[in-house]
Length: 129
Image 1 (tube, rainbow, N blue to C red):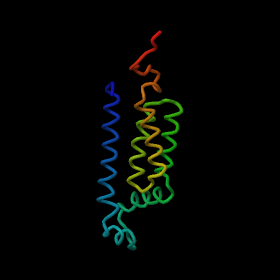
Image 2 (tube, rainbow, N blue to C red):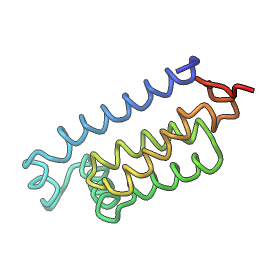
Image 3 (tube, rainbow, N blue to C red):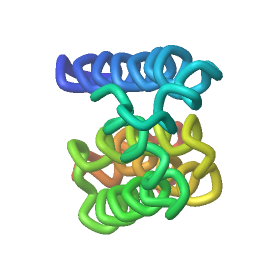
Image 4 (cartoon, rainbow, N blue to C red):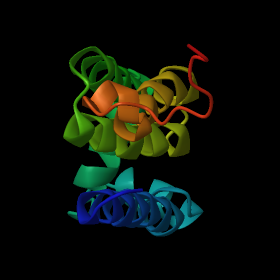
């Protein structure tokens, strides 16, 4: 970690992951939401729950993470790498772990590898001459 942008990226990834964990614990997994959302007059809280379920069923979380991670890796983009890490963590939380972990790994590689960011990597041993 070299600069303020890295710490902001870490904070954003932790915040989005924590928010997704909290939402799943509060608004998706409790059994009373199943009964409430299948009733004749469901509450408005069922709309984001249904959207989350749709994205989870069609692996859209994992696809988004894989797309962002592949783009970050190909373009050596730190902001896309941060996005891929956050999306990958959310994909794993939402049961899209295969593509999500691959996108997260590619994003982390693009984000943290100094050689891919246009900076020379530190050499531990140089040529002897």
